Length: 509
Image 1: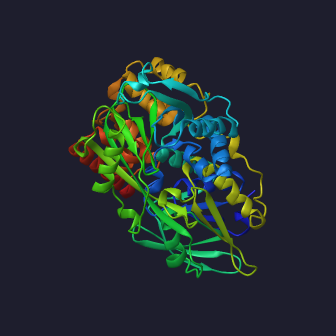
Image 2: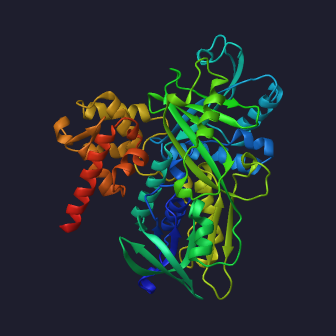
Image 3: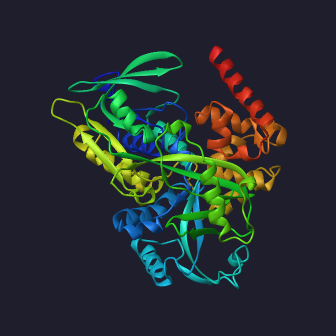
């Protein structure tokens, strides 16, 4: 039961940040009965949460830094998240070639043994050894690689995971306000008064608790909005990725060791491409302006070329993206050695409304982070102190078995036989059972309306505007999907014009 009816206009919880941690906390709190409002200055997943390597993984290399609690928690979350959203999370096998002179084979075997047994694995298959001279995974690699190990992790559509958490939070009563910036926060003994701005208009919102989940902007919120005196222990680390045309035909990914101690992944991506990443280097600029540098692009090309027969050159890159990870500053000497664990700091003096700030974390452990945040706030939530609930809850569209994607895609094809198989597969991957909401009543392609490019139809675009807070073409093409890889600049501009014109017409009406 929410406390809001006792004092109209006063929320239990206000969350700053529409990334994975902010939406995860909003969802968890709303599901426990708290009244919640979330503010995001841009689009959902507009920052780091759409710029990850898109893996739900334990983090094999974190074992080297003895982060056993983090690795165990992350490993346990793989199958939890897979079960909650099997349309956007699915298993992926990783091939780790052994390179003499780097980590010895015995160390890799030990690490993979721990990886298999730390995390309560049930459905994911375990590790096995590969002879690259016989296995198809060896075909794209240089002839010198003979031995490899293969293990399991999961893939996730990261930005869609954010949107689905926001969707579920909203379904449970939370208000999700995108394109809304918190410009000031005044702290009283019992509540916060937030000044928020959207579309050039300002208003005041009151909340008992303020959660700062602004990701790379967490320090900026503390110093510029909250006016806190305490220093923020955040270390901004840039991670960049490149996308090239498909380098191999099988559906497994590679994890490559490099002499500098870093690792690089090469992952099947959007059917026709390969994703290569990531880099790790300290970042001191504006997080909104981060972009892959020429140096990073060259580094990733060179690292992958050490393994693949076919050299990868910067001119082969069809797209790049980069994000800034807001890691907790643990004093590590190198960016790649900084902890990926999360730290929650609660400032809740007797005469001041509570402030919870979120540092670090990784997309794999966002749900556990949200549980930890609500546990820290338990004594301040009053009647909204229900127990944790998200471990067995499904996200929108995920109400089918974890291993049931193929069956659902086949059912959609039977129900809508006019759909191209690739189109049906993409819709089910993006929306799961909610693909039927987009397709409802359609008897042929014409019923789906205008086609903006590739297989993106007016029916789908209107769904994204109505249900997922999409406003412009970038929201649709690079966060709700990755169809930006397939649409031309002219097609993207036409889509943007349609969306903004339609929104303006709806607003005028």
